[in-house]
Amino acid sequence: MNKAFSVNYLFSSFFGAVMIAGAFAYYNYKFSEYKFFDFKQHTFYTTKDIFIPSHKAYTVLVYSSNMQDVKKLSSKLAKDNPILAIDLYQKRFKEEDSIISISTGMNTLLKFIQRFNIYDVPCAFEIKQIKNELYKQDTMIEKL
Image: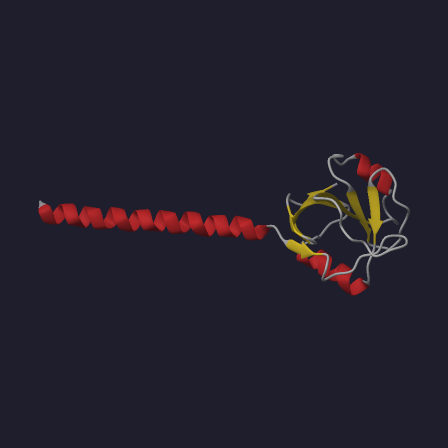
């Protein structure tokens, strides 16, 4: 009877360790699902200057000005945060209604699209400031 107890105890300990390891792996996977982006390493431009983020959070809108109107798209988004509008055709306009139009070189734009796994436009997602100019994706990418 003493031997059976130790075997059961051994299996239950092993099962508990597997459960904890599984939960840890799942948490790490979910955390890594959202991407980081450092505006210090990648330069974006507004109509006149280099874009330096000044808010704690932004809604990023990736669209094509040849296919969609940014004002119609922005009306579909929640107005909690300023909107960073990134046009794939690199057209910029003056900031209005908390919409900040930014653009960049093609290499940086491709890195941005690849980093966030953007497959369809228009799409939107939120980013939140982690430290200085380092931001982390805070929501899933929503196709509009």
